[in-house]
Length: 412
Image (cartoon, rainbow, N blue to C red; front, top):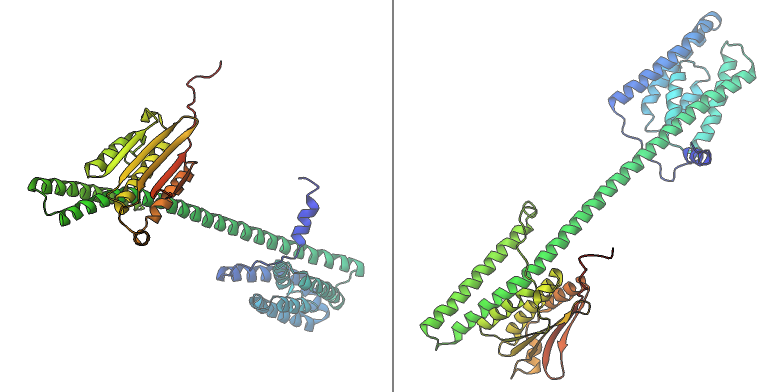
C-alpha cells in the first residue's frame, strides 16, 4: 500500500459525511441476531462479575440483571432515537455488567452514522460510565488500568462502527453511480433511436413527397382536362396507379423500420446515388415536367456513394418543390465538379408566370424539405443555400466535398 495515501484514507474514514447515507431497513432476522449477540456478550461479561456480586453485594446482582434486560429492550428502539438509546444504555453500564452486550451493539451502530457531534460526548460519557462501574462493582484493579481498558474498548467499537459506515457509504455511492450510468446509457440509446427515426423520417419525406406530388399532378390533370382521349386517360391513370403503389410500398417499408421489434431484421434497400440522377430527370420529364440536366461531371459513377446520395436527394426535393409551386416552368439541373474540388448541385426554375408576389407568398412553403436538405448537406461536410434572384428565379445550390481518390498502392 502506498503510505502517502494512508493519511487521506484515514481522514476520509473519520470524516463526518456531508450527506449521511440512511442505514438499510432492519429486518426481523436483523433484530434477532443483534439482540442475540448483545445477550451472549452481556452474559459472558456478567458471569464473571456475578460471583463477586452474590458473595459481597447480593442486591447488586438483581440490579445488574434488571438493567441488563432493560438495555436489551431499549436496543429494539435504536433506530427511532439512536443517540438517546445509546446514551441511556451507556449510563446503565455504571451498575450493570449484563448491559455490556447492548452497549457493544449500540456503540458500533451509533458510530456507523459518523457524526462527531454525537460521538464525542458519547465517548466521554461511556468512558466515565465504565470508570464508575469499576468503582461500584467489587472488582479490584488500578484506576490507570481501568482507564486504559475503557478507552481501548470504546475506541475499538467506534472505529469498527465508522468503518462499517464508511463502507456502507461507499457501496451506496457505487450503486448510485451504476444506476446513473444505466440511466445515461438508456438515454443515449433512446437518443440514438430518435436520431435514427429522424433520419428515416427525412428519407420518407424525400421519397413520399416526390411520389405523392406526381399523383396529385396527374389527378389534377384528369380533373381539369376534358379533352383527353381514352388512351391518354388510361396512361395517366396508369402513372397514378404506379406511383400510388410505389408510395404505399415505401410507406410500408418505413413503418416496418420504425417498429422496435423489426428494425434490426429489415435490411435497407439499395439507396440511390449520383448515377441515378438521369433516371430521376427522365421520370420527371415523363410526367410532363420541363427539366434539362447539364452534366459537367462526366462519369457519374466515380462520385462517392454518400455524396452522390445527398446530391440525388437534393435534386429530388428540388424537383418536387418545382412541381408543387411552379408546375409550368422549365427547371435547370446542373452538376459540376471534380475530385478534390468538390461537387456542386444547382437547381433553378423561374417563378411562376402570372402569379403576383402576394400570391407567391401565400403558397405553402416546403420549409421542412429545405431544412432537411440543409442538414443533409451539413452532415456531408458541405453547405446549401436557396432563395430568389433578381431575375425572378428560385434556386437551390449545394456544395458538397469530393475528396481525392486514394491510390491503390503506396510508396515502397
